[in-house]
Structure formats: structure tokens, C-alpha cells
Image (cartoon, rainbow, N blue to C red; front, side):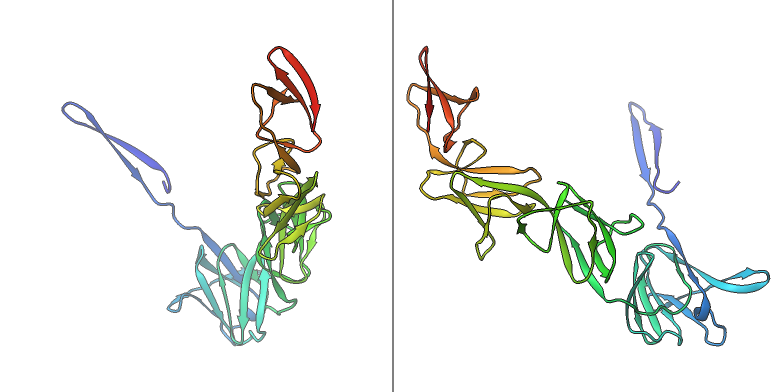
Length: 298
């Protein structure tokens, strides 16, 4: 069977030899159905894969009358339909397949079954839709969609964080992903998480060093350059090693201006947990010297 493994055991004098044979899965075959003026006998349509292989059609009859022609096309084949009734020039998407139409011909890649009820009429403009990190975009039928999309298409957004940004790296708020995107131009959609900047921490991104404001939602994967004027450095959360850059993840984050803390014969904790080399400004440390304990504020 296609795609199955067969194990053959061959007895040998002192051992068994196992031979595994794997067959390649046969490519899928889709059905192209042509109707209307694309099956007009007075102006016969020809269907090609590549430039040299013409595909023979199968007449489909209803009540003794031919109402359609069917063509069996291998998956991912480059298809050209030639017919004098094709007059529009542009691009159209039908059943998820992007079709280029020019005078006398249609060209596309066969990725699913396709029915054309006549020569396509180019309608709305087509724009490029891009899904950023942590984003899945779907059309009205629930199919994942990116690339060329007709203007006006309603797109469902699934964000890893529950929020997204459209054509922005950072903004004062994220859009809840229950809100759809309407395609009206080339557009990119990014999953976003919240970045809080406290205790003097500041952040920028990009070659232009665009500032991020406390509480902004920022696109996943964005590298932030972080500083804290007048402090020793910046930490993620309340304590840890100082950082100069932070890559935004799916988790909301608080970046704090921090002080370097050096301990000699003393241990210190925050909320019962040992501190790192840097501690966020304003944190209360519990310090222990031998058997004595002292609470200190920085």
C-alpha cells in the first residue's frame, strides 16, 4: 500500500536480517470542473499542465446533455487553461486557489478541487496578508490563509496571547483576537503581549530606536533595548541578572530599574526567595547575618 512499510525477515545461518521497504505515497489527484463558456464547443477550451501536456476532459451529462467537463489534475501541477472567452486581466481567488487571468488564458497551481462556472471576472484588488509570530489567520471556511488575499476579505485571527497588533510593532493596547481583520491593503498581523516599564526602566526597538511606553503591547519576537537612567541596570521582575536587551515572548512582563546588590557574609531574600545580583528599586529585602535577621528597604 502507498506510504506503508513492509518488513521482510530473511533467515541467515546465525542471524536474521531485516529488510524494510518503504513506498512513496502517490500524489493526490484533484478534479477541475469547467462549466459555462469554458466548455463552449464553438470555442473549445484546452487544459495543460506545464507547456507540453494537454489534459483530456471527461464530459459530464445531466439528462443526456453535457453540462460540464472534468479534468483530473495532479496535486501542485502548474495548470494553464486556454480559451478565447477569457478576457479579464488580473488576479482572483476561488476556493482558496489564486488564479492569474490574462487575455485568453488562466494560470494557477492545483492545490484542491476547483469548479469554474465560466471565465472569471476580476473584481476586488488583491493584497498581501502576513501572519507574524504567534498568529494563525483563517478565512470564512476555517482554512489557514496568508499571501495574496482579495480586498474586503474578513479574516479570523488566532493569537497565542489572545491579543494582536495590525501593522504595528507596539501600541497602547492590543486588539482582542475575537475581532476580525478586514483586508484593505497589504497588512501584517502580530501576536502581542504587555510590557510594563517600572522604576525608571525605558525601552526602544528598531534601528530608529522607537520608544516603548509603559503598558504598551509589543509584537512577539521584538528585541527591546532597555536602560534605566540613574540605576545600576534593568531586571525582569524583581531580581536577577541585569539585561540590556529583552526579546518579547508570549508572557506579559515587568521590566524594572534595579540596583546592584553585593553581599558579604550576609544572605538576602525577597518573599522567601534568594535574590540575584540585581534587585528592582523599591523592593524590601530580608537579610540574614548568622542567626540574626534584618529587614531593609532599598
